[in-house]
Image 1: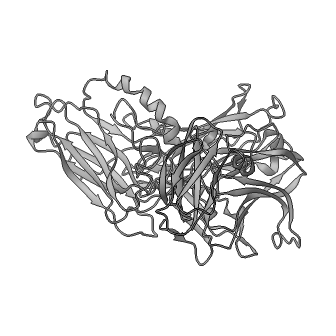
Image 2: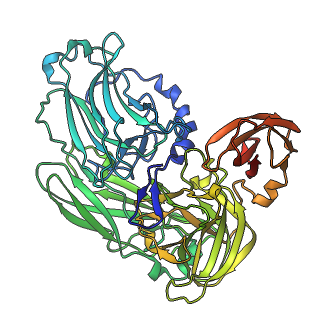
Image 3: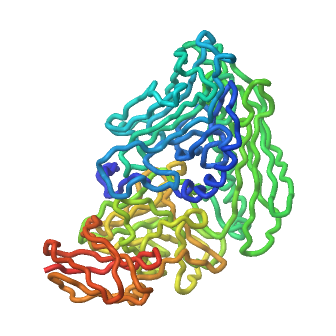
Length: 614
């Protein structure tokens, strides 16, 4: 999996291999297709800086929607928002879930037809297409064999490659955005239905061989030295209202609002003009639940933004104090940040950011976006434990856990784990004891898109917790089939100071920057996403004989037929197919050893069972 070691620890950072934001918005994107067919050819100038709150391209400018529009993958973009090219399809999953070596054309971004008819534009009009690109960003650097390419469509309908940049070996440094200027002088492109298309080639299993694209502009009257952007706007998302968490139950916040509230909102403003700029910026806040307007005294400020540079901006926060509509109700404060005044020709879409502070039924350090995956590099007979420190301001009831899993190639649906809750960890925060409050055995990871793109696990019985510190996390059994389970890692947040792991009998503070995406669920009863514990799943099917030499017979009660998959302990699929109840599967070609059989009923994977092949 090409892990990235963190010193000599057994913590690792892996590829994401899954994008639930893309998956969840696939249907929305499909619904825009009828809108696109009604738009005529566009006229110059063409401009796009990908500042949006959607994860898919603007259907009034782009024909396809494989790329991921986001505000978290790019590092120091030209302005807020980038288009990310990777190895994931429009549904946010790998183009090929089994290949680990092939390269292929992956994401594409194709403009709507643009009218470059000779009656409007000619080769002497200094027509240029410009854009900025960044390799890696907050993802992984594109490897040798990867590439980002640009094609122009000529008047005969053929796409011709006019520019490309290759991948290379990994780099520890995040490279800045690079500017590209492409002159259009060949009359073969001057057509009323001209189009351009960005495409990447990638190893299909790596989601995070990333190229980030920003600030695309096509217009006349330009030259190779045309570096002027003349735009000032936000280049990052503002920080949270909360001091440590990104979200928590409102009742927990109101129990100690002073300690939970950050002193400032921090953001950054990018000035792309050639001259400095002094301007005011501010925010407004509204409690969505009752419409109350919050007007703190420090909600406005003035900054001097140097030319061609990024400047930090800060504004005083407020203490949320609106009455709660109920003990378990979700409360949302909508914060709108904006720059007061800019030039008339300055694109205004990136001068405003709307950011919601959500108080819900969970504790979270992450912002809901995973850029990478976190895992423990385990080998039998070691088991692996992950514990994340949380705090409560008043007693509460834990109902379960929401976990965001990173995809693995092959899929890790057979990797078992337990959810753990501790009141203390030996050697952590001065504790001389280790106290387990709950161990829920055993679960399987889930990958189907769900609420907030997490998989929800419900406890058999609620766990009452006192005010103060507790730890919640997972334990992976000491067996080869459950090693190295991937969890989502939000690299834009710094929650690692609350993370501890234990592989060899000692709890060690995490050294991986970012927030592991596990969220304790509190208060109201939790609806599980659909995964049941292993013991219950195991009762639903069986096979015999075991050990086996040639054929095995599968018995199950979930319909007339089911799919099955036989894998080795590394997760590689060796045999697969469908079988009827009491049907036989031939395993005679397998080498002697231990294997795992997984049965899929109604699209849901049951718990894997071990097969000993003689």
